[in-house]
Image 1 (cartoon, rainbow, N blue to C red):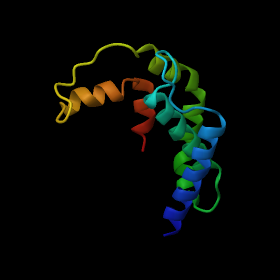
Image 2: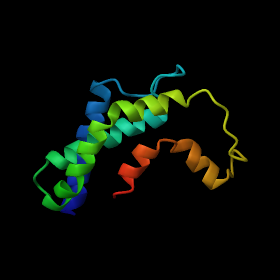
Image 3: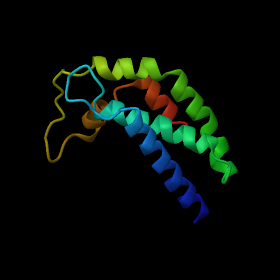
Amino acid sequence: MKKALVLGETLDAATEKLLENKKGPSRKCGEIDNRGSHFYLAMYWAKELANQSTDTELQSQFKSIAKELYENENAIISELNTIQGKENDIEGYYLPNEELASKTMRPCSKFNSILEQL
């Protein structure tokens, strides 16, 4: 229960930062889309989890992840923005090919490698 409360409170704080910093998705190609917006939410949430002191297990787990996300922010966002505007065949709308859909929605290898640490 304590861990869930920490996760919820830090997610609220991360969402607030996302909105304050105007990191929501843009409608223009080459600017932050849903993938970029999700990156920023992950980065802010990891930072909030690393900075809280209520749950030291979560704090230690997210300290290095938050650091890596912040250090690689420009490269990750640049990669996410430059792949926009290209058609991707995911072999269906309602029942897409999972591998192709994942590749389309998770195109940044650096971001994926950081997330895989979890």
